[in-house]
Image (tube, rainbow, N blue to C red; front, side, top):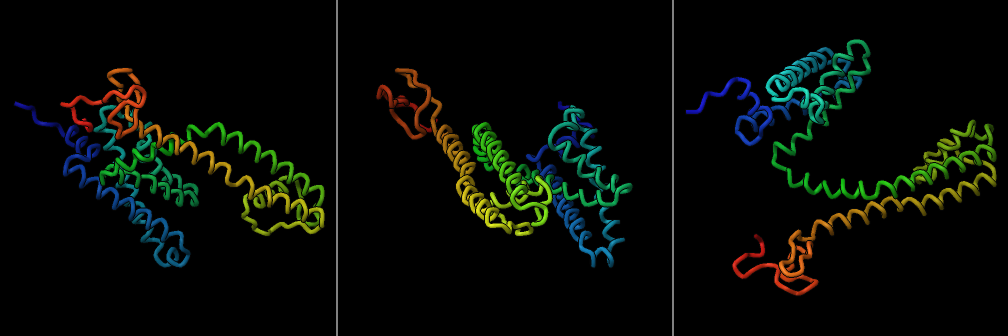
Length: 279
């Protein structure tokens, strides 16, 4: 006869597991509270609403903070490894969801950091059984890891370019035309090279305008480089995933195309007659 579950075990199943009806209900209500809390924070940032309903919004925010604080403490209580949960990704996000409210008691502007609670909406992937989408996101992570060194070299080159262009523009234009310092020139070079073009600082001299034209052309030339690097790595990641990890029984080649029925090295069948291809 099975021993009855303790309160701690029951809470653990409800809070940390979504494969039970109670766990799914808990997470759905939690997501509703997170959304409601975010709406309250956004409404409170609107001047007219804050002036008319500020007291009500603050009261609601403290109610949500109390609920999230209680939930965090219950998670620590029922977790088999509280320290591991506290330093996990979701544990840190849960802590950040309540800290700004208390910091806001001393620094009023910190109250708006409560928008970090939006990160808790990542739980929707567990609640709504969207894990296949998370698996597809692994392609992006693999591509980012594969292109990390190339993109790092690219950004170092871009940083060098904008520093050179910014310093040259400072020398050519000078403070009288708005380029009051080399960092100001670097800011202009970044804005121009990325084709944003705010227009708050513009060159006035013919030589400065010529340099600006060169920076614009360079921006169009290099803006597609990181996209191309990442796209190539993403294609490689998807291609590698499409390979079937099944050794050939004859030549022991380890990978084949997903729908392959015969080895592309020796031509022997990959499956026996009794074994289905989707086994």
